Amino acid sequence: MIKFFRKIRQNLLSEGKTGKYFKYAIGEIILVVIGILIALQINNWNDNRIKQKKESNFITQIHQEFLLNRVELDTTLYYHLKGYKNANKILSMLPINAGTVNLDSLSNYIVGTLDHWTFNPQQSSINSLSSTSSFDIISNSELRALLESWDDLVSDYQEEELTSKRYSHDYYLPYLRQNIAFKNFAKPDKLILKDPKIDLTFLNDLEFENLIHNRMIFIEDIVNPPGINELREVSETIDRIIELTSPN
Image 1 (cartoon, rainbow, N blue to C red):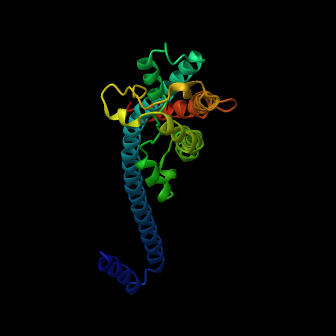
Image 2: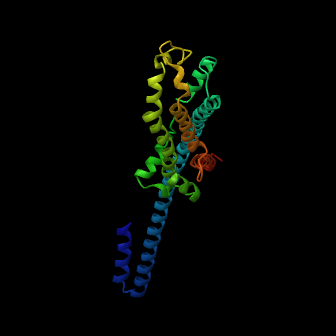
Image 3: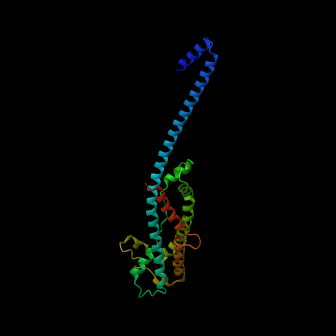
């Protein structure tokens, strides 16, 4: 094709048709420019198509992950509330008469305060976007903002969970180990207070009361804290991300 155009130009010059030569040369330049623009447009179209497909894949993955995160948060909340309610029940029983108290029920209440659950969301897609600085691939500005702030939001929420867990491991569990037969956890009924070696007078110790009270307060700081409620923010963010990523 290039040889063909060159031959035409040479013929015009050899025939002395200078005016026609320049007109032809200008026309040829215009054709080349149009060809370049068309090629660029096709290239941009291909790039956009690849980007849209990549975004679509991420959106699908994010949607599936946050459906799982909804279940994970609900499960976590269930165990937090279980611990809170059982601690509250124990406090309502004080002072406890070791001779008349229902040890089966009290055992179950104490066992119910020992669960430790931490919200561990699925977020491989967000981690992938973050590690490659690719959040711009998400065209929806609201969704992009929610995804970019997700890590910080989860970290803020988990701080209360970790504080509660540290307190339990450092103070609550060591005290209970000194006064309760933990070997009974291996039994189906988990009646940790029914052991002849246990001195049940600890149930009316001020330290026991304070530990149960603090356990309840730490859980309350997770599920219904004063001031900013990170649990509610996490829950609302999960629901909104699920909504924004739902297939049309």
